[in-house]
Image (cartoon, rainbow, N blue to C red; front, side, top):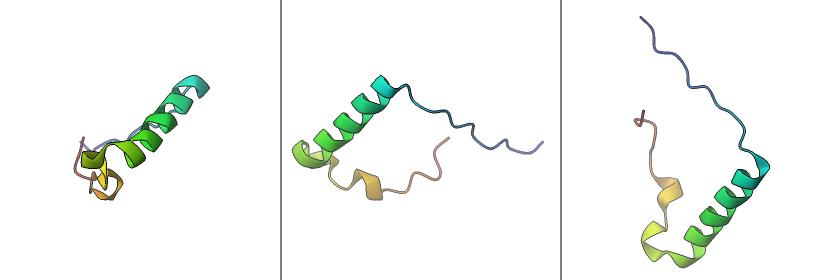
Length: 45
């Protein structure tokens, strides 16, 4: 049996705005979160 590719769905606009705001906040405010975008997440399921 082959592995199915992930199904991606769009966020509701309100959720997308909140998601973006949190990520902007993380980039500026939370020192421990700096560099999280550079991590390799390819092995996560």
